[in-house]
Length: 461
Ligand code: ADP
Image 1 (cartoon, rainbow, N blue to C red):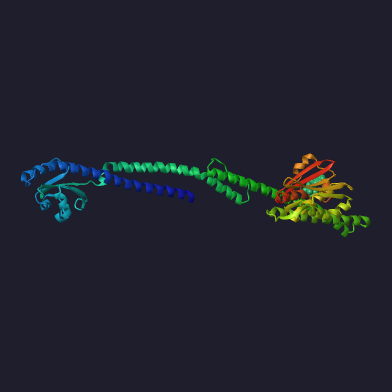
Image 2: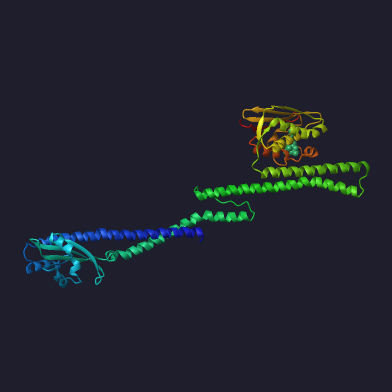
């Protein structure tokens, strides 16, 4: 049995013990309240009736005899004595007259009141209840009427029922035990299943799922586990794909570098071809450098959830980004035009914001033919700064647009590769924009050009 099941059993047993203890106390209370009080009341009523036989004067032998006659048919033992000391001769147990009737009680008797006493008698092993009535005449205690009755033990009261009760308790315990056992097994099953699934996950098998059979807390826990397992499995698959893609991306430039360098070493390539081979080696080395740099950026962006934001003049950052990129633009004789509202202040991480713009400008240049123009705009719209990078390049087919921000996604692999693209640029932009609580939107027309719009919140005044 599991510890949890053991705890529930312990709880049930504690609950039963407390209930039994409570029942015991309740029975005791009822015994006291009902049986003892009832006996007391009957004795008083019986005694009062007998006491009326005394008509004053001396307590005569006839009166004593008449009263004692009732012993043969009454429920209670009864005696009448002239001197209370004589009682010890009548009752079958020890009576200490001094403690039986003290000075206060004597006064009570003289006032005509009855006295009730309950005491334990060892010889009978039970409690004796006794009621004493006075025979008074002109303020003189002429004698007493003494009634006593040994109270039955609580166990005697229920003597016949006890066996039946015990049998009932046993049957009850067995039936309840059976149902509790069944219920526990039912409750424990999903937990057991969860435990096995967690174990399966810990060995690296993320396909583990549990069945959800209820809507209670355990059902919710099972649901949460399934969601978690699903997320982990997806993450794991993405990681595997990512690693496979990275190795694939690196393998091509490495094989170029290896092949050409070995050919040069072995003297297979000479003259102009050798120059071309060295140019290709340099190009592939650059590609590898770029790819590793972008991978580093991606890892950095994904690992870092919080960005350090400062107020930044957007137009200045745009100018800095254009400055960094302008050599590449010049190589293709592409002109970059900037049209920015100088007043715009955004709360952003300057380096990351610059990275967004550089990546977008690199794409605009890479996918535009020579001598084209790239426009960069920045305006305020409601509470957002709206930046646009507009090119007159090759454009992106509509069906590719939704996937364009996925890692390693390239529309035209050959062209992108030839232009030095890795397929990581836009996925980095997408993540950086999200870190700035912004949005990224791409519109494009094949052969016409592309408009990439980034919106990030303006600094609140
Ligand atoms: P890459 O490093 O290959 O440019 P990106 O993630 O930046 O990777 O872009 C993904 C793909 O989207 C590119 O391979 C390219 O096909 C397409 N793309 C991105 N920007 C543009 C653009 N301005 N014009 C045309 N195609 C673009």
